[in-house]
Length: 186
Image (cartoon, rainbow, N blue to C red; front, top):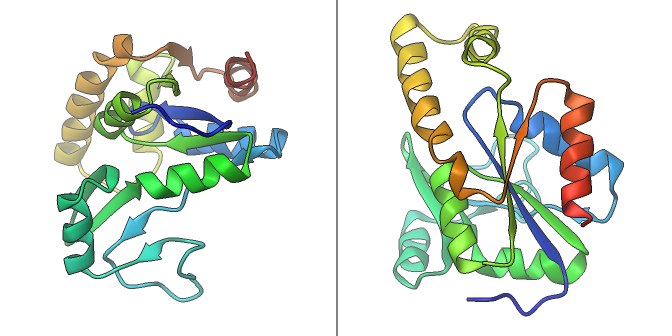
């Protein structure tokens, strides 16, 4: 389904630890014409979070109804809650901004690309497997088994990089941001 808006949709994805959010934050600081979508979730708001700003907080019943009505372009059940991006949210932000950048996991990104074929997809690649292990390990929050699972998932995700419009290696942050900025403004 082609989008009827004038905005440009950029999808950024890649394996855990490749720096997707860091690159997105730097890109958004550089270009004030970039809007961000708000995800929906079934989890309860944390202190200070606002509905419609941080997330759309909805009931599990509402979330499941939206899934059944094909209102999500991507969704996932993580731990005990659902998270997802509503098609109406992408359309809303595309109407407000000239550009929309989304940081999405690989399977969700490929699904969005099917629904918005004019979207530009960028796979953010780590400079090497060793650097990726270091980046994930420096978080210090996981044991060896979880690290092995993350690396297996990362390798599977990197095999899908050929399905993206562009592959950008995030070796030097400024260079990766510059390259994605140039892609977005082609």
